[in-house]
Image (cartoon, rainbow, N blue to C red):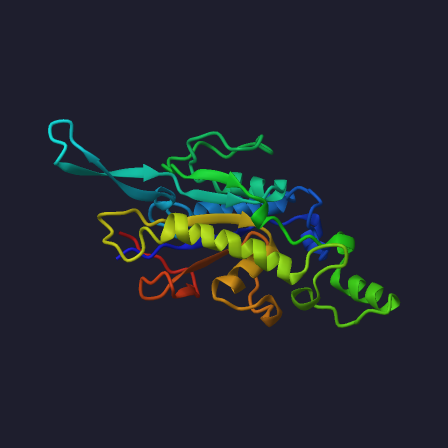
Length: 269
């Protein structure tokens, strides 16, 4: 039975992720070490016998049509719709996607951000979509400063010192409610478009319907919380290191039982 997955990939290391500065709209590159680590992640986790199988990043739909010989005779044919890999508009996320080297055949929807990996043998027909729904949390006036600096600033302004982004949001930026709304919108799109049509069906009839998302630390943690129906003030319950990969799926092949996969186990067919 088919049980699709979502792979959450946080962009690789940057100078600001190293120092703990909140990086939302600021577009800064990966460090050389960040690029090196993402390349290694791609080699380790991407492949036909690996965690992320490029050819499974697609969706099958059945098309019904009547034959030319008989209008009463209905024929069925499986057609391939490229499922999405969703990528943030920020260059650090897009560069991370490039370095994973999935073997995307079509041109990317952005100008490539650096030297490209060697041509991949993977056969990935997925369509890559850049979406604002998975951009990083808008930190407002907290952009470019660390959590201790934020708490010090708030104390001087007469605001609560025990600042928590999941509860308080960001002055001049986004609230937890606003982040929840756009994350929920993307979750619903993924379920409706790519995963509800294939989940629970025999594997010989449909592809896996797997989806890849490459984005940022806070927004991916928010995505995971909303996936399992936790409110953001319930968090933070999950961590995702720079360059890390997380996996979401379902229990019992059931679209109404979203779950988090603990560990990176995968099956070699």
